[in-house]
Each structure stands twice: as C-alpha cells, then as structure tokens.
Image (cartoon, rainbow, N blue to C red; front, side):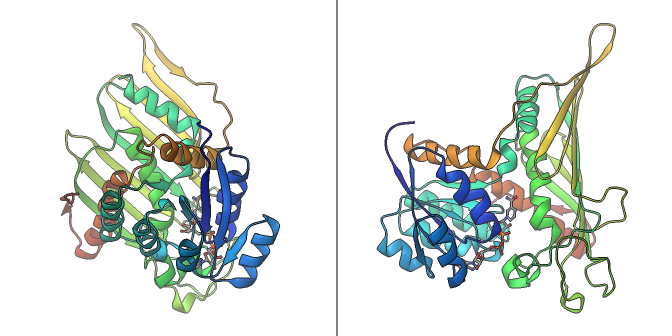
Length: 360
Ligand SMILES: NC(=O)c1ccc[n+]([C@@H]2O[C@H](COP(=O)([O-])OP(=O)(O)OC[C@H]3O[C@@H](n4cnc5c(N)ncnc54)[C@H](O)[C@@H]3O)[C@@H](O)[C@H]2O)c1
C-alpha cells in the first residue's frame, strides 16, 4: 500500500459495525477512523469514547462536517441503499455490509449512483475472503472442474430466528427474512465458485413455518413477538444459467434438522472434478474430488488462517488507494439480487420466472 491515509467513518455501530468494521480497521495501516454515526446516541457515544473518535447521530451531518474519504454502512438492511446513495452523492466511497440493498431496484440505484459519481462501492461479504472459497475459485479458474454443470448449497439453522428488530422488523429488514439475511451468503458463495454466470430463470418457494408460532423454541438468538412475525424462515430456489449450469439452494432461520448451530455446505460438480465445502456463512473446509488415469482421488488443501473481516476492509482500502475495482462488486450484487427477487416472485406466482438483467 502507498503512504496515503484514507479518512474513514462507520455508519451504524451496533454489534457488527464494531466487531467486523471498527475493530479490524484499527490495525490496518493507511486508515484513520475520523468519526462514527448512529441514531442511538448512548451507543454512539459509548463506542466513540472507547475507540477515541467523534460521534454523530446524523450521518448527513457527519459527512458534511468531517473530511471523509470512505465509509462502512452497517445499519439495518432496509436502510443500506438510501444511506449508500446519500453518501455516494457526497463524493465518498462506500463499503456496504451485506446485502447491498433490500431488492434489485435498490441495488441497481446504488450501482448507478456509484458509477455516476465515479466512486467505489463494495459489498461487505466477508465470506469472500474465506481461504476455502478462494481455493474453490482457484480450482474453477484453472479449469480443474472441467465444465461445471450443477451447484448446490445450503445455510441452515435449526432454531436461529434473530430476535432483534434489525432483522425482523419489516421496515428495518427490508421486508424480507432468511432468504435476504443469510440466503445472500450461500447464493453469493455458489455464484462466486461458478464465475457469476448470467441467470436465465428461477423457480423458488418461501415459507413461514416457525416464526409465527407463539410457543416455538427460542434458541440463543433472542425473542420476538410471533403475532407480528411476517417474514419467511425458509426458502429454496432452482436457477438456470446461460450455458447450461443449474443451481439449487436451501436456506433457513429454523428447520427440523439434526444440527443445532448454523451449518453451511456447498458443492460444485463439473465433468472433470468437483468441489465440496463446509462452514457457515463463510466456508471453512474444502475438498476437491476427481480422477487420475486409473483412480478416483480426493485432495484437501492446507488452508491459511485468515481474519476475513480485516481482509475485506483492507481490499476496499486498497481499491481506493490504487484506484481499481473492489473485489466484491456492485454488478455481482445485481446478479445475486435478480435471483433473490425472482425467488419471491416465483413463490408468489407458483411458477418459474424469467430473469432479464437490468442495463447498467
Ligand atoms: N456480514 C455479516 O456476517 C453480518 C452479520 C451480522 C449483521 N450483518 C449486517 O450488518 C447490518 C447491521 O447488523 P447488526 O447485527 O450490527 O445490527 P445492530 O442492530 O446491532 O446494529 C445496527 C445499528 O445501526 C444503527 N442505525 C439504525 N438506523 C440508523 C441510521 N439511520 N443511521 C445510523 N445508524 C443507524 C442502530 O442504532 C444500530 O446501532 C445488517 O445489515 C446485517 O445484515 C452482517
């Protein structure tokens, strides 16, 4: 990195804003945390005092008063796009924690604004910095899968409906449940491992089976009012891509499965080799399966350990300093959200829906 210092601010300093943005930022050279913004004044002041920075309760005020080059946006999802567009319009680069917006329309508007303002937009999928996923990408790019024809994955919690309004209040969550909140990870992982091909059609279904049950078991993720729960807690989808690849996924905040915690799994099948990976939102373990002349064989890479949140932030800072495209692009989120939106539409209509990617 050059010696240029990027002046940085974080908008939304709840759990994730502190643990996955402020804390990893502090040990990255070339970055100075100049301010934070959060509508929760006591929380904002507490975090500002702990990390020796300035606190604002209005991010617009912060951007106008402070000299800021870049921000992380770590507010509830329903606010991501509005805040990102405001900040981009002020000429500031943005790292938006996942997902980039609540729907495709919002995502397109953020990407268009970034292009117009010639500012960077990166999406905070820390899962992209998983060495296991990066190995899967290397295998794919080196042609070791041959032609990938099928990808499958799931991200399932047995009982993990989040109790916090950030995730289940319809306005804050963007009006969507498990599919948008954690489905975005497994779909992003699968798209990453298969090169973000162009989706053609989607068949999907979403269900609410646990969140609206008054005496449902609450398990470590907080309580919620079941009479007001209106979001999906399970979703499945089947996607066809240009070139013949198909993809299927399952995602659940709650399901009657054997494991208790959040478990993620993915496989990509090609005609020369296959990848299997396990983890949660981020893959932690990966293996490659193929054949030699006379044998079937399995390979397991020795993976480095990684501070994924920090690598994510570093790559964003580098993309600003070196003026290059960030590694997790807005355009990739257009593909991702075209799929997510189509799952809801398909579920409502009870049939397959075609995808036409918007012009950018
Ligand atoms: N990448 C991950 O693994 C991961 C994990 C958890 C959460 N997240 C994402 O991070 C975001 C926040 O999640 P969290 O768990 O930190 O939630 P949280 O509820 O702990 O924090 C959200 C914070 O945003 C603040 N806020 C709300 N409106 C605001 C506004 N207009 N301006 C400034 N601040 C505002 C709230 O006061 C709160 O402090 C969500 O979009 C979520 O999807 C990502």
